[in-house]
Image 1 (cartoon, rainbow, N blue to C red):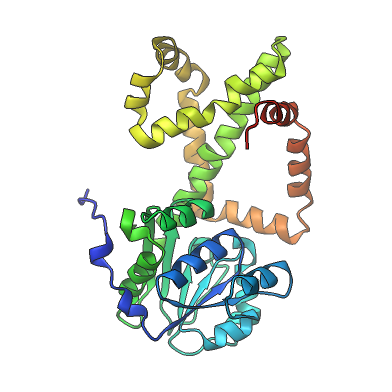
Image 2 (image 1 turned 120 degrees about the horizontal axis):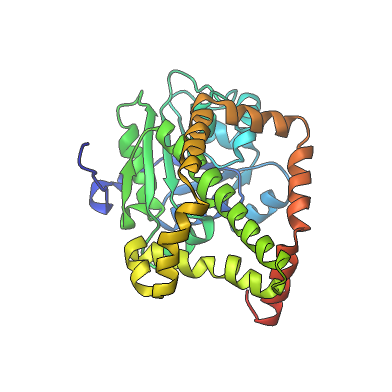
Length: 329
């Protein structure tokens, strides 16, 4: 395996963006955070978004704000920060007819490129500039003078300087202060989706819910179950984030550590790894992407039902009480 290279501020040149206009397409949490950071780094930023709350929010922040088509027409770099499932539709209807020859398409998630929802013109650069952190962290770390780590990738390099431009955008958002890793778009898209649904969201959420249910069904107070199986997850994750797993085990009690070794493999048994491998194959093949797109395009009824089911889960009610009683915000 080749030695990993971490790209930092000295590897990136902000002047690559001089005289070039970057259109942020979409002004949700990431759109706002990334647009503000880039503007404060001296980049010429415009926002392309449909009329409504996001349009008004972008304008209230002082950005030149216009339709997606108009922003795409005058931009040199089109940085798409819309929900994955609408990339293709918006690109075909509003961006592609307007974008000028030689403009760069940029993304913070590679879903639509990897799974062919969006087929870029042959004559443009296609790059990824992705923060490894949520929008609030992107903004807070930038303002603190540091930055979240990031990924860059180049899918098409027609200009000969796509990598240089990706690094410049990463620097403008503070990622190179912490460090940037170069990867492929497939590695970013599939790795990100796999981690979300098997560990960070799907795996962890189900594990917390099952733990809560086992304790409450055995007669334990919901508030106690919430503390033990959900609330304290943050404390452990924070230790892992700052110190790693082995160091986390040095901080926790011997009781907790021995229980990890004895009971962890019983709960998360080796067959879980085999199911994870199956999940990765489904992601890489495009089957998961197809199921997501089919659900959204059919009206999202199953997605809405799952959200409502989760809201009604007893753990959510217990969490509301705990946060209220203990002033947790």
